[in-house]
Image (cartoon, rainbow, N blue to C red; front, side, top):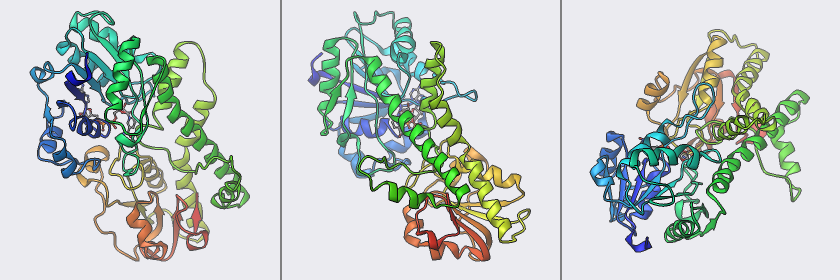
Length: 424
Ligand SMILES: NC(=O)c1ccc[n+]([C@@H]2O[C@H](COP(=O)([O-])OP(=O)(O)OC[C@H]3O[C@@H](n4cnc5c(N)ncnc54)[C@H](O)[C@@H]3O)[C@@H](O)[C@H]2O)c1
């Protein structure tokens, strides 16, 4: 297929799919396809609630249209899949959205079409789990009638510097010609360039280890924080000192939430276990990172007790709910685990986050977000997510939400040690 003949469909218009659709829509006829009608309606009106794309950027994408209709999908010849790849309650990959999207594409697939997966998976998922669905539904043969590619996404929600076009992209294809086609397609929109991997499995593995490596490294730093807290040493000060060495890696302790770093390693461990290898380091990192919320709650309670604050019946304000700063994404936020832990201690918790949607919080987690927490009201304050509003407000002003005697816990070590009662 010639690049100029590409009619692109992006399947799944979330944090990953929408910015990609907007970029492709500047250069190629592009269909943004999603099963969520509310999302399509919002995008047609020029609004992106994920805040990744502005009204102006949406308007600049002249060749982009939105639909959930199969008849529209059938007009396309390149299908790019950006649907979620979550885990289930047993921490096993949940491939239902990926399989569902593959079934839909299978109904639209024609001779010569190319299907490119972007969702994060384990090595082998494209060819072992998705291709059979495409073949079965379409009745076409892989690498004879249609072809596949895998090009993992690296965007970082809320990051206005690293955007789709400025992040180097890994590409791959099911035959050498298709690998060239997929690479050229992305190169035509990505100014940072591409890296053509030698196979789809290599590209899949590369993506999943990016996040696994981060997870394990954060796990190590979290373990160091546990040790240093016992020793009465400030972890941030230690990291600052150690960081003066050229090859010391700049990881920081913290909660590991969201739908990527805390989830993707389970895709890799699932695949490893399926072939009879039982990973140790990866799962140790996961275990450590998953227990940090309970640890943070326990730390706060201990500090309150030291100040002779009655814990049962006390009130704590948590600043920030999103899984990371300056972003409205609340999926798999570990702040929720802190709330649960504190409530177990009999603490009443208010949560304030100017970035996230109150309705979404009620829908996902079933509690009411505070609108304007009263000052002088709390026995404990946790700065959990360093949104720019909180950082700009400053430590003094944040502490003023508390009573005269209260504990101010700077979980992300944003402020100098002397301005807070404790850090992670
Ligand atoms: N958000 C990130 O930071 C990020 C970064 C890199 C990679 N990824 C990976 O990209 C993938 C997508 O993540 P996301 O954050 O954009 O997800 P998301 O939840 O923001 O969006 C997914 C969209 O897909 C739609 N969808 C689900 N099933 C569908 C189907 N069968 N057909 C059509 N549409 C369907 C949903 O309605 C939703 O709009 C995941 O595999 C994720 O791991 C995400």
